[in-house]
Length: 276
Image 1 (cartoon, rainbow, N blue to C red):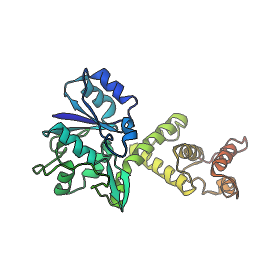
Image 2: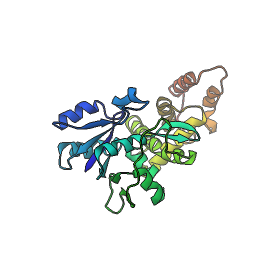
Image 3: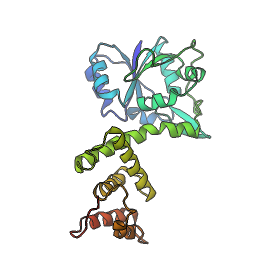
């Protein structure tokens, strides 16, 4: 059978939308019957899928890139749900973390580098996972017979190394950079007009790293920092022309948010020249 495993945190009003798309949807909330039950409405859910249905079309058009995965299984649905429920969290050096493996960007980063034996153990009763752009040769699929499916437990059976976690976090960085580029293209359209896709991604990564080097990491902070780089150049705040900005960044006793306000005020001074 075909199923969708969807991310309730990324799709607003997901259950309501499913009832509008399917006459009698069979919905399994994976956080139910776990310590995360209070978050069940914004957690992952599994729903059986007719490949030719309106739901399948909406998935392909709206959710496939970042909010869910299409999977196939010959197992009993209850067995499949129990195994998928067992994967919702993992241990990283003894610390339990939620594992958003149903985000397709994380799915490939997590399962792709593993050996066949490791991947088969994690897939369990899942026969195949179909991600955007997959062919029958490139999709993630189980190679060996199904072993005993896993069951949810308070202590996760899945273990991740810090290296794996960092690699999987690449999906979030890529998503953040795309949002940052959209912001820059909207408010500073001249900044990136001559950049190809690779150069734009490189610019976004530099912007994020530059902001982090000065203590700024939230989306709002990095977006404001991007405005400074867009106006003052890639080397901000390192050139001689940026001396006034460096002085503001070095002011003692000033909150980081106030420093950003001061930098933006300096940028807007009538006598300030842009070296970019």
